[in-house]
Length: 199
Image: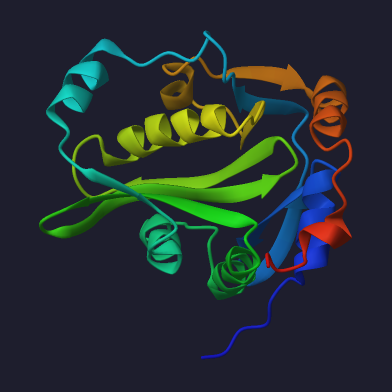
């Protein structure tokens, strides 16, 4: 089956305004929560004690951007998913433009978990994560934070806040504060320029 896509310029333009899409019953809906979830990338980021122990064992090989579509499909493997064919194809198109990325946890049995999201300016917008083996998505999140810190990112947007994300130091901020922070993160970033393929 072939799916239409949300044009990349529409998707990135929405993110630049603090808006993101989700599919529901074959329709694309757009959201801008009044309370926005973020994970601070400074010392407030917290790795739970049990996860630190798991990390020392290095149960997975971490890879970036080697199986983007597979990560999206893994994230869609749940009841009531908002990731339909249009969402998959739209973000795969962004990935081909270097604007959507995946973090993957692999072992001898294959892909066991990961996450994906969108990069724009100094902001990374986390979209979804999944696990097939214990701690895989959590380990992917830690790897993401390390990579974002290395590359000078300053905002990790989780869209909604959950109890799970709070264990990592996740907090909520109001829409007005979020939009002000977002514009600071995007200063100097052109959505049009960002669509140009890297040389």
